[in-house]
Every structure is written in C-alpha cells, then in structure tokens.
Image (cartoon, rainbow, N blue to C red):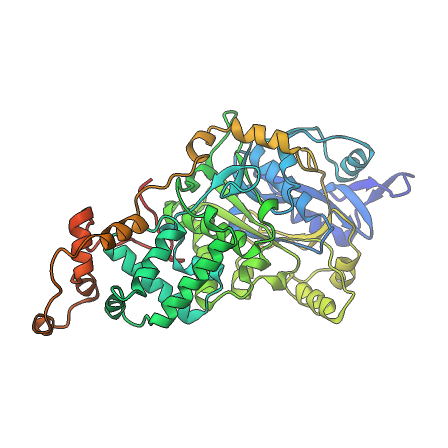
Length: 522
C-alpha cells in the first residue's frame, strides 16, 4: 500500500486519503500469495476500496469463527467465503439451517444495492453460480439422504443426542463394546435397542456381569431413551447406505471445489440431533484422512453453523473430543469455521485454535449483552479502534476482522465492509432443489434405504431357536480362572449358540476414534 492510497470521499467530492493510523492496518493485509478477498477497510465510517482486507488461502485450514447478532450478515459472509474457496479449487461444506444458502448454485441478481456495494469495496462483481451438492439428514427435506450407522456414530455422539448423563454415557460405551466384541453390527436404532433389550432380559442379564459396571437399571434407562427417540421420528437418520464423507472432498469437472450444502430447515426443530450429526461428519473425516501437514490450500473447509448448539450441555468427554479433533484435523488439511452469535458460545480451548475471525455487529441492550460485548473485545488483539463502540455500530454486511498472515502471525484488527456474493442471495425453489438432487451422481447410491441382516435379526433368530447346549454347571463355572472380558462374553451359552448359527467372528474389535466413532467396510 503506497502512502498515496486514496478512496472516494463519502460526499462524492473527490478522493479521500487513507489516514496515517489506518495505513499499518492496510499493509497487514497486502499478501503476495493466493488469498480470498473479503472486503475493503473502514476507517471513521469511510470505506477505502484501495485497502483490501484478505485472508491467505493456505491459512484457511487454521480454522476460524464467524460471529454476530441475528440479521448482521453472517450467512452472506459464509456465502462469500464459500464462493471464493470453490473458485480456487477448494471443496466446502455448509450447514444450511434456515434454507437460504441454496442460492449459491445459481447466478445472483444485480441491482442498485449490489452495484453500490461493489463500488464501495472495489469489487468487479459478476453474477455466477457454483457447483453444489444438496444433502439432507435421513433424506428428510430436499437433498441426498445422509445416514450414519449406529456403530460408526459411536456412543459419545449418541449419548449427546439422547441427552444421557455421564454415567449413562459410560454405560452406553460398554454396550457398544459388547456389540463390537460379539460381532453384532449396530446398523440402525432397532439393532441397538435389540442388544439393550437382550441385556435387560432374563436370559441376557448374566451378560451384564461380564461387561462390568453396567446395571440393569441404567440399561433400562438407555432402552427407554432409545424408544422415546424413535417415537420422535429419529430412526431415519441411522441406517444404510451410510454416507461416505470422502464425497465432501470432490471437485467439479471444471476444477472448482464442490460446495456440499446440508439442507436443515426440515429438522431445525431438532438442534441437538443435527448439530451432533455435523460433528459426526467432521469426526468421520478425521478418522479417515491421512496426515498432510501444511498445504498450499485446504482439502476442505467445513462451516459449522449454530455452533452454540454443539457445546450446550455437552459432557467433559464430548468437549475434550471436540478440542482434540479441532486441534488435530488441521494437519489433515481441513479447516473448520464455527458460526455463532458471540465468541463466548465457543469454549476457550476451542476458541484459542480459531486463527481467523470475522465478527459482525453485536447488540448491547441488556446487562448480559454488555458482558458478552466486553468479553468479545478482550478476544481481539490491541487495536486503534474503539472496539466496544465499533462492534455495536457496524452495519449489515460489515465486520471486524483479524486473520493469520502468510507467516502465521495475526493481522491487525480491521473494520471491513464486506463484498457482495456473486451467487443468488436467497433460497432456490423446492422444485429446482429436487431436480438438482435427482440429477446428482450420488442419488442412485444413497436415495433408497437398505435394511440388511444385523444385530436385531441375529438376536431375534438366536432367541427363537432352542439352546445348542446346556448351560455350564456351577462346578464348570468355578473352574474358570479369572476370565477376561472377551472370554466372559464369548463363554456365554447364548453367544456360543449365536456364533455357531450365524458364523460370527469371535473377538472382533472395532477401532474407534476420539468420539468413539468407527468405520465399517463400505
């Protein structure tokens, strides 16, 4: 940025020179490598289009936060960033909670407001649509059905969905371990319910003693929670074919990154479910992707909308797993942006890992609002701006920004007027969405649910047959010397009968990652 940097004065009378205090800020964003253009620097209410605020492309896997009160422009910011990532060959995942991000697939509509914003920010605006894949949890809504098997979803995430306490979460983990070692595949909820029901039955109660610390009462609570969960219509989210998250890393034929939009309006009244499913997608990617270290551009940028729902009432184990996943997934080339209202919605251990910040306006109408405002200001580097005053006075589509520079150091805090998205700023019609879904190459793979033989069918069949042999006598039981957990499970008469009749592989172990998630062969 030269000392003669100028911009049109707000009254149109002539160019306005960039003030001396603002020049170091502008210089902090003068990157030489590939970068995303976010907008133009604001100083004393004047927008300076020659002073561009940018974020280096290689730093997008250092994670970020997009925050701000409702109606301040967060959704358009996501759209703007997603467009530029796609254009530079980076796949993007977006959670569309309100249904207004689907327009990214179609060229935008110009007009006076867009022209004015483009002139103010130095943007050469042109209408453009981007390659999009529409997804929907369990096929509820408009999108390719996204399902997970209960086995791969794992006990930690499922406990969060079911609202279990810590003891019940640990007990659910034992039930999963029992099913893992016994070769009982938990594909859908009825499989898990069948295993829990068996463990609480007269025939299955002895098995509880073999998996240590699981009481009949706790197993009963879990069973009732599962039954209530199914009664709320949640069964569709679990089953096969399970969604392969490698599909989120695809490029379009023209080399642009595919934008995967998870349409959530049909399930926005189930926030606990969809926020936890988002974490499953991220954990699944973490489980599969190889280490790549620092990369020239991310393999994927994952936007985690309504992030406060993920952390609300989360157990310590769940929060620890989130922190570890965010810390480690960067080295696998994945950037994660949390989208919420204030930074205080994100635990400090996670917030400290978010190197790129876009903070839209905050409200300070109540004492709680004022506390949140002061807490937000403290999370920013020292700045020549009065951030408390600035954050309450920003207009729609304006934000306070700091990112990581090309050498990994934080850039100066910059008040910014953001560019306008080039795609449609609004939702697509339902018919157009459905047409895009049917034309997707993934439609034939995921559209129809499959219910193959798994734990429910195996247990039902085994319980319907007479025992293959008599139970061991007390003398035989007494002769066993401190059997291991797996030996106790394998040694039960029920298991021997089941293994003999369905060819189960004994002692089968499933490797589980931080969240207890697991991968089966697809």
